[in-house]
Length: 109
Image (cartoon, rainbow, N blue to C red; front, top):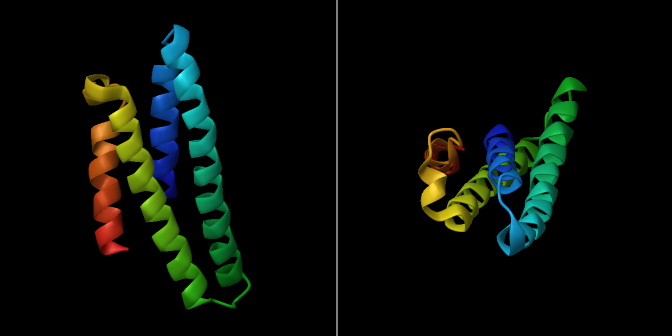
């Protein structure tokens, strides 16, 4: 799920870099906020993985990481599609796929 969130951030970044003017400025602030969310999901996921590697598997920590990462992926993919509008459906961005996968992640995780 963290990978889907990162993929969404990367796709939105690619689209924003191709823009110009006020729209680009407006979306840059969203990118910064999204980057913080991706990193928080990544940090929690790594923390859970480190606990497992130490032999101290923590079910609560792992569950928190799964929930946070899947919710982050869903929020970011939804926000990216809203921000880009019709452009979000272009196959080169994969945003529709990230959106569908993130929803499945929320359901299964």
